[in-house]
Picture 1 (cartoon, one colour):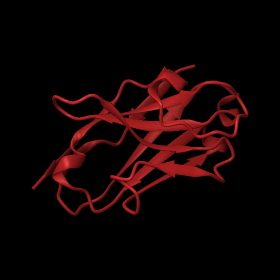
Picture 2 (cartoon, one colour):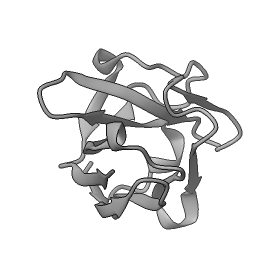
Picture 3 (cartoon, one colour):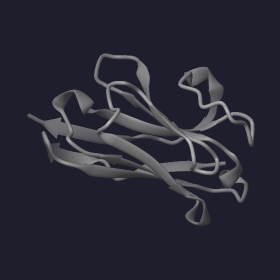
Picture 4 (cartoon, helix red, strand yellow):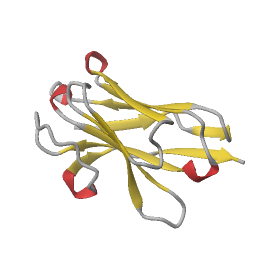
Amino acid sequence: VQLQASGGGLVQAGGSLRLSCAASGRTFSNYRVGWFRRAPGKDREFVAVISWSGSSTYYADSVKGRFTISRDNAKNTVYLQMNSLKAEDTAVYYCARQRVAGGLRLSSAIADYDYWGQGTQVTVSS
């Protein structure tokens, strides 16, 4: 399994970006997928996760109401729409596959994810 994150860039505060996570493998649609981020000098932190069907989502409090995670299983892609961006959203963003196909629990724990993309840089200027 390979995950490829893209869509990062430089944006002004209040602006928007959409990140994409493209996956290889025909069983991708069976897995929950999450987004995480690592800000300079900080640990990697959970951002959002989506169920294998796309019907359930879970967000970190810091992004709730501003970010939206979605997926298109026909394209093997998960998206993260980021609106009302703040300087504190500046980080490298990673997508990852949650372990165990077909499960229902949406996890925010890094240890529950096995395959990770390479990351895409998001920089928000204030």
